Image 1 (tube, one colour):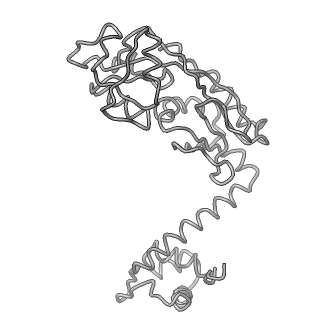
Image 2 (tube, rainbow, N blue to C red):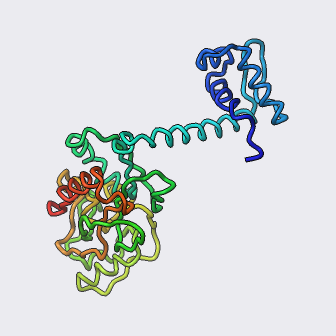
Image 3 (cartoon, one colour):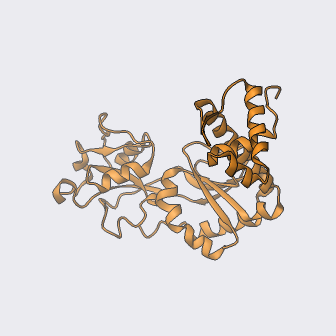
Length: 294
């Protein structure tokens, strides 16, 4: 904290940097041009570095000025969000959801408009990440997680289970698709979650292993896109298939399905388990989470 410059100079720097003009910054901040120049000069003297290069009436950020302005803009934005979030109305209106990118792109986003139609009072943002959300530092209200429910310290409610089965494009191998599970041997099989191909083979009564060569994917949406492109066969979860089978983008190869040992859970901090927005999202998800049409 001892290295902080005079805090009154920081909004001035942000405005001057964004507008590339002391005069425009002065107009926005409702002060004089001289006041802006004085604040910037004071900041430069404190830091012992030039933040702007004066070119006649124009001012241009130096590299140091640009770096500091970016940091100041981000910090002021976070402060503004924190202040706004202190409002009880804002807290109730805002709904920030964290989930996996694959679930966000393949299931949640195509349906989220229906939730907003039924709940227009919410302002929703979706944080799609492979990492687990930190409910304290990330500002996340609710997370949709896929796993075995081993997340201590959170209120959890199971939404739905899932199941695995192989799919491919109808154009794969020019339409000469495998008709028996044993014919998958030697074909390009996309991998993302270790062990599930082996488990599916066992469910099909086969002692087979997927090829060790090929591409590993860290997100199911990526290998499904490759499958749609006709590059290989994906062992997908029913929750992620979307409308691609109905639309003819993908074909379900066999009737053999592997029940998942994981489920989808809705998670939040315990103190928010009875909040209206948690209940609203939970009830909607429970009604929507039906993979039976696949």
